[in-house]
Amino acid sequence: MTMSATISTQPYSRIFNFSAGPCTLPVEVLEEARDGLMNWNGFGASVLEMSHRSKAFDGILNTAIEDLRELMGIPANYKVLFLQGGASLQFSMIPMNLRPHGSSVDHIVTGAWGKKSVEASNLYGGKTSVIYDAKESNYNHTPKLAGLPINRDNAYVYFTSNETIQGVNYLSDPEVDGNVWICDMSSDILSRPVDVSKYGLIFAGVQKNMGPAGAVLVIIREDLLERVPQGMPPMLDYRLMAENNSLYNTPPCWSIYMCGLVYQWMKKNGGVAAMHVRNENKAKLIYDAIDNSAFYKGHAVPENRSRMNITFTLPSEELGKQFVAEAKAEGMIELNGHRSVGGCRASIYNAFPVEGCQALADFMKAFELANG
Ligand SMILES: *Cc1c(COP(=O)(O)O)cnc(C)c1O
Image 1 (spheres, protein in one colour):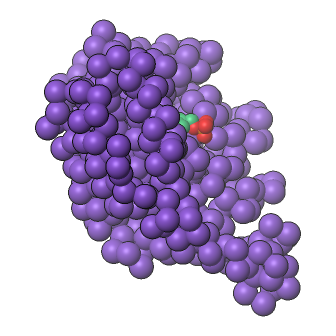
Image 2 (image 1 turned 60 degrees about the vertical axis):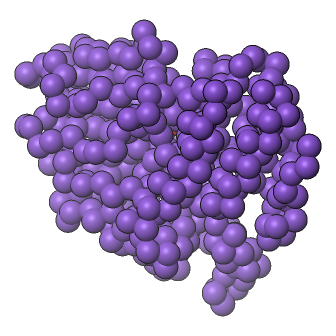
């Protein structure tokens, strides 16, 4: 097979990294981080070594928060927190903080992460109702939020905007309907415009679409902080973290700094609206290769398929393995699918270059020709 030599076309001989997380970061951001690694902006030391109580770090944190507020249009009555424990700890912190003792909550399960949120929620007092579970279709779709059998006196309704493993997403926000909507946006935050005011709480592990691993972003409507019960373990207490602007203890300084650089990169490149257009175009290149072939089969139904994680299978498991191996030799790595779906998964978050999507689409056509 002859294929484009993808490796040499990227700066620093970088490969096309389709990792589902941690993600590819913008080259300009990595360059700026590198340049500050010995002496950040004349500070005399790097952000890695800087006191989190210094004025310099305070500036880094607050600028990141302000830039994110601007990018997402976060209303003034929401707090922006950078916490630890990954997105996974939020599966526990949310019920611990926001489900008053004895009350019930509703979860919509459209994939593996939603399922984990239910497992964690079940560990704490109160009832967790799964009002929709897409398990029977092996999580290949997302139901419309309006019209689900939401319980009238729930403390909140929880869903996942993009299921990273199965590659299904929501492209619109819930309606304002009196419910407190909570959303795990780990793998599609900042990939499309979102109306934050429709949500009570949004959270996202930063390593999918914003920066390196280490921090989890929580955007919470202030009135919900009043629900936080007394006697919470301090590190799990949203109210304490909000009162301290995420500086109750040493925060994940480097991760926050890198997120801030990514926010500036996004602002320079047209913000969320521009990312959205770019992401649609990037995903289309690969989905077209799937749709125009009888060889590849998309896992998700077309109306709900993710722009961030593209899941597809090949006619056999062997061909899937061969595809992943040959793609790797061409400079495209991490294309193996999760075992629950099989086949392949291409994760193409905001910073993933369009050239990589084109290279994959070209490779898919050539591979089909040779093996179909
Ligand atoms: C990756 C991911 C998580 C888990 O993130 P961690 O930071 O590793 O805990 C949760 N939800 C979604 C949607 C994810 O993609």
